[in-house]
Structures are given as C-alpha cells and as structure tokens.
Length: 140
Image (cartoon, rainbow, N blue to C red; front, side, top):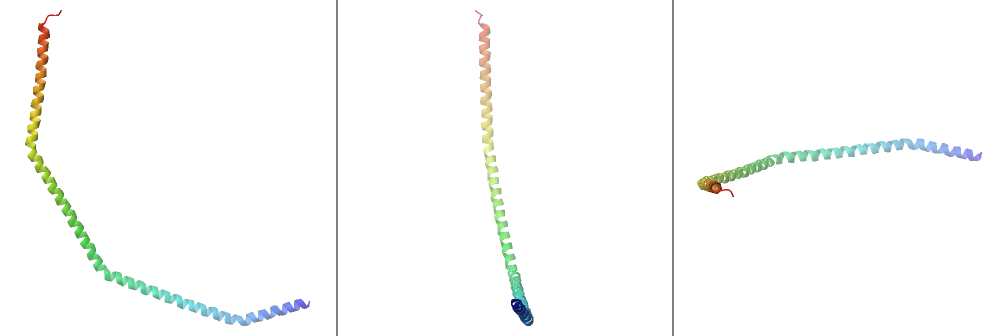
C-alpha cells in the first residue's frame, strides 16, 4: 500500500512539475516558431532579391543577345545566298556545256542512225541476194 501512496505522490509531483513547466515550454515553442518564421522570411527575402537580380541581368543582357541572334541570322542568310549563287553558277555552267556539246552529240546520233540504216540495208540486200540465189538454183 505504501508503494501505491509513493507512486501516487510521485505522479502528483510529476503532474505539478509539468504544470509548472508548461508555461515555460509554451514560451519556448512560441519563441522557436517566431525564430523559424523570421528565418523563413529572411530566406524568402533573399530568394526574392536573387530573382530580382537575375531578372535585371536578363533584361540588361537582352539587347546584346538579340543583336547576337540577328547577326547569326544574317550570317546564315548570307551563307545560304552564297550557296544558292554557287548552285546557280554550276547549273549555268552545266547548261552551257550541254549547249556546246549538243551539235557534236546530234552529229554522233545521226552518224549512228546512218550506220544502223546502212547495216540494215546491207542485211536486207544480203538476204535478198540469198533468196534470189536460192530461187535461181533448181531443187535437187
């Protein structure tokens, strides 16, 4: 029984200590929350400052970036125009060469046709001669 009384006395003492400590604990928690809030606000303020500096830097660099992009586009356009001029010149040279070689090509084709016609005529004459020869010889 004495253990129970001692136990009850210990619990009563703990409860009393908790009640006495509770206001101090609440004050510490409130102070900690206040400190956390101040710290979080400082972080947010720092981040907002960094973001503002980044935006200022971006705005300051934008004209140079746009000028660089424009210069790159002009360079690309000039390169493309150069390529087109070169291709047009090559095409003109090919056309000139074709025109210059056309009479010779036509002459070769005409000579080939005449040769083919002469060959066909020779074959036809040879066949006709064989046919006549076969007709003139009596059958045995």
